[in-house]
Structure formats: structure tokens, C-alpha cells
Length: 587
Image 1 (cartoon, one colour):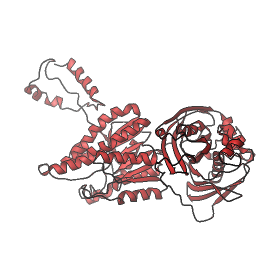
Image 2 (cartoon, helix red, strand yellow):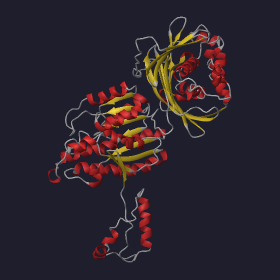
Image 3 (cartoon, helix red, strand yellow):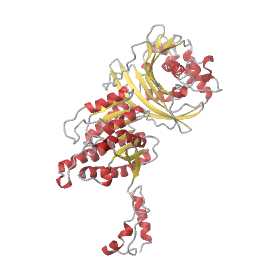
Image 4 (cartoon, one colour):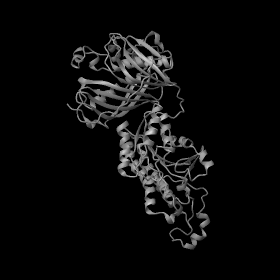
């Protein structure tokens, strides 16, 4: 039967699994731990091997292949990435939910790749880990689909910094499968021969567990809770009883590259290994597993947002048309490409988008870039902008519409498809970019000010529609040096307004920990405050039921104009209720 290409978007789970310390120990024994690793095998002071996370979601991994209708005779584990958000407790209950994000075609006779991504939470409310799993269907290629984007990893041209040897037993799969991976390929000789192997092979994830132990023992001895991320590609099968070596290269503090080789043949069994580790204070905000779009990210604020998101674990779509400050010109791929290169140099993941936000088609393509590259979308920062300043009397329609098309319409063009993608995942963070020019006014910027205030109205309505889907929409008014402000601000002030000062406020509003929606914040030079539309308590100048006169409004002007005890409303209905209450006692 053919692959089920409609499986893309199919939900995985929810799966709830209870476990005890015995399950953690059984897994440790299955991946070679023993008397020399009592901290993994003895309930006194027990610690959990980070890769035990895989043993808790075998059913989710199986769903990936089954929902996509992969030919089981040719199924293998292709790649696996684990992002660890919190240490795994020694017992409890976990809930896992995700979806199939991609199905790629490697070509006739070359197989297909099915990608599934999931998040796992402990019953205590903590997010434990994110899994990105690639199932390789060796017999399922050639259906005419797109191939997966290439992702290469350059290993140092030198001897590894550490080599950890291990010798799995002949019956290692029989022990490992008791943790839940019961696939016949690892135990049934007839099934193994049907699949093209001499005999049952080692579970790739069993070898993966050996590697995890080796990495922890070498890089964070006695502290597996410091593991942050483990990613790899399964390259060749391994038969039980064959000795292995885990080769480790330290790249920098907190990051190492690794691979596992067959000690007899020298063949690489697991390749493209990345291991990240180190202290992660509980208060530190991370974006591991999140996918973000930043528009106008080729320079200035957008670049600063994109870089910090990547440093904190997000996968980023760097969008920039590459046009002039006033939006003119054909555009250039250089600004976006340069920021992508910076992110990749940091060890992060990013792709470029050169589409204009000023058209609905451009907005759709920007969001599709995120979905194609990373399978989902969690964060959108609407940052793209242009300037065409003129006094109002000289503001031609062309300049009026050009600025609104980028700032206001552009936010709509990207936010609408982004909102749809976030709604499906029941999670999202959208950030609008307003300005003090919109909130308070600025001479010669009627087009810019109108667009920036329009974004506040867009946020006010979107926040209400996003509430039940856990989509929070907020707005930032950054005061930062950029090419839009370099000849507007005095040089000494411009020098003090580094974009990095606005980044903390913006990225907090894009985080899981953000508690608010529908708020506006000023941010610049290290100073932050909230801005809001306040409504005064008001007065009823004549008895209820009577139509006020112009004179009665004149006489009550001081009282009705007062903002003392003013109130910021969350939606129209709240203001209407207060108005009706005032009318009851008016006169």
C-alpha cells in the first residue's frame, strides 16, 4: 500500500504513561548500565538517563509510521532529536502530544522520510522534553514528493577528544525491548530475513542509549540533568554482540559533536551527533522546540530578535525583502542570508525568506516557509517597516498607501496564515510593532502614525479570538536605533539606543511564560513601561432619558475630560457595561 500523504498534520497522541523508578532502571540496564553506573541502577540516589525519554513515547513513535502507512518491512529509525527542558523525575505520569509535520520523498528505490514532533509534560506541569523523530521507510520512495532539505554537519579534522568503548551483549535487544520497543525486527529471525538482514539487529535507540551514557559520563559526569539537547542520524544497522565506540569532539563549552562506530569494521553506526549541555537555571527563558518568524530581520531590531531567539533554542525564519528604507527597489537576498549565516555560525537553525509582507501572497509564502522548513509555527514578530515622511498637506496617496501596506496590511498578511497555523497547534505568540509616533503622534509621520495605531486595533481584536487557542497577541513600541531612525534622532541619542535594549521585552512577550495578552509596552535604552488607552469615569450631564444639550457638555467638560481613576478596558463589552451602569444613576 502507498504512503498516506494526508497524514501530514495528523495529531500524535495524546498519550499518557505512568512509570516508576523500576522502569528507569530497566531502561538503564537495557542500554548497558550496570554495577559501575549505580546512579542509574540503584533506587538510592537514582538519576535518570536523559535518553530514557524515548522509552516513554514508543507508542507515539509507532503512530508516526502507522498513520503514514509506512511499509513495516522497510521501516527504520532515521533521525532523532531530543530537547530536554527539565530533568526527568524518577517516577510519575507523562502526557505526550504532537503531530506529523512532513513526508519527504528521497526518490524511487531510495525511500521516504516521515517526520513527527511531540512535546511531553509531567503531571507536575513541567515540560520535560521535545522529540523530533524521523522514520525512514526504505520501501516507500518514488511518489513524486519533495526531498528533505540537506543539513550537513562539519566534524573537526582531528582526533576525537574522547573515545568511549562498549560491548553490547548478544542478547541486548531482548533486554532493551522490555522497555517497550517490541518491534519484531529486533527479535524475530524470520522477520529480520524478510526485511533483508541476516538476523535480528540492535535497536538503533539502544545504541543511542549507549551513546547518551557515554556523553553524560564524559561531559557531565554524575549530572545527567545538565543534558540540554541530543540529536543524531542513524546510519547503518548493528548486530547484537558487536563492540562499539562513541567518538566525542568538544566544539565549545556546552556543545560537542559525536558519532558511534562499529569497532570491528570502523563503519559509522550513528552520525551527525550533536550534544548540548550545561546549567540551565530554572528562571532562564528558552525557546527550544519553538519555531519563529521575524519579518524585517535583515538588520536592526529584527536581526537582534532573530539572533537572540536562535541563541535560546528557537528555529528561525529570517524574513527580509532587502529593499531600501522607503520600500523602493527590487530587493536583495543579502540581508536575510547574512543573518541566517550568523545564526548557523552560532550552531542554530534558520532559513531565509525574501518575500514582501505587503501582499497577501507574500504573507502566505512567509508562513509556508516556516511550515516547510520546520513543520510548525509558534512565534511571529511583525517587525518589517518602511518610512516615507512628509507633512500631511504633501502626503501623496502613493506614500500613504505604501507605508500602510507594509506596517498595517503587512502585519495582517502574515498574521492571518500564522494565526491559522497556531490555532491548529493550540499555541502561539504574535507580537505587533507600534511606535511612540502612533501612540502619541509625531510631526510629518501621518502615514506611519496611522499605521502604527492601526496595529493596536488589530491586536485588540485578535487577542479575543486567540484566547481559547492559547494564542497571545501583544504589541511593543521599541525606541531603538535602526536605519529608519538614524537621520531622525540626534546622533548622541541614536548611539545610546542599541536594538539589544528592546530585545528582552519583545522576547518575553513571545515566551511560554508570558502571562498577558492585548497589552502595549514601550521599550528602549533599558527603560520599559506599559502604555494603555485609559477611559475616564465620566459624567452624565443631564437626567437619564434626556438628550444632553451642547451647553450641558460645555458645562461638564472638566469633569468628563478627567482621567483620574481612569480604566483600561479589555474589550468593547466591558466599556458598554460600565456606560449602562453610569446611566442608571445619571442626572
